[in-house]
Image 1: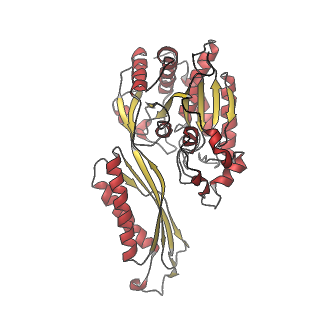
Image 2: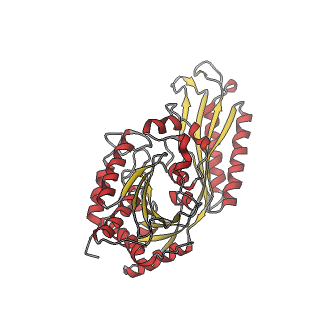
Image 3: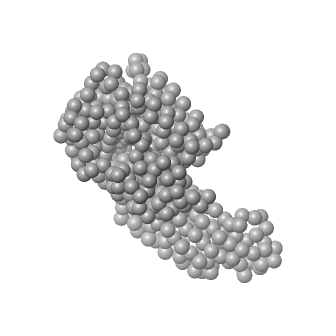
Length: 414
């Protein structure tokens, strides 16, 4: 495909957005920070250029609407998240937002209106890095966000409620973020694969069939801090040593089931001095599987194992369940439309599952949802080395635009 109509501009915008960060030497864009605000304003400008009317809702989602012939018809939502992990790549999340904007821009340039509105959404928080929660924006839109989440605090002790208020949102008006029942026609998310399958098979894009379910926990262990030189090994209540045993237990339990993966991605030992026995430790546990029964059994056994180890070491233990998300099957009809669009563009159809979680999981609780994966180099993601090609970016917008123009009927459903 030599006519790169969309790829160069999309890649330039992804690069520009990728420079908006809280850190000077790497991309880190956590929710409700000045970098988040700056990114929203830049994306809002591009939405206006594409002919959309924009608003930021009470949870911090940026929504650009491109009106249809019938403004009261259920809207098709397209989008992804604008937040990032620490030291991130520039395509995870923004690719889904900016490809949606480019597809709408193409409609706008031709003066085309669809029978229904299109809403392009930049979700406020999908990664859950700052507040150990995920899908804040998409769950708010679906009306499934538990208000108790606003009490969660970040590492600096700032509650989610206070951070949102400082950003201009309002946790007390959470219900206003939810779309009314029946007002969403469907949801499409374009996203990098974050895995090696498409590259290995030399395919630019693939259609997602399902997304693994997830469970996230935060474990807090309390032992007794003491002098590293004067407390004999047999008299210690070392919270970090206990955490180490628990982490290895998580690894063994998950390695025993081929479909199951488990990760301890963050650990904080206090007081954090070289000559002090750690008296308190906090660490996270992330469990994922395509089968909810397998994941549920593993989560239960991990909790029991952690509690057993804590008791044997004389450690106080509390375990908070921060996030539970069922495995999600993508809407069959949306998958068929994507497949037809790929064929119309002369592309082979490839189906694959997602091991990572996405906003589409939360959106599937209130409307039909589907995803288009884009090949990324070596499957690397959550890393500055994250990379896609201009040709593949172009393909993604072409496929999305063809779905919008040719295939989605006014009565779209799952």
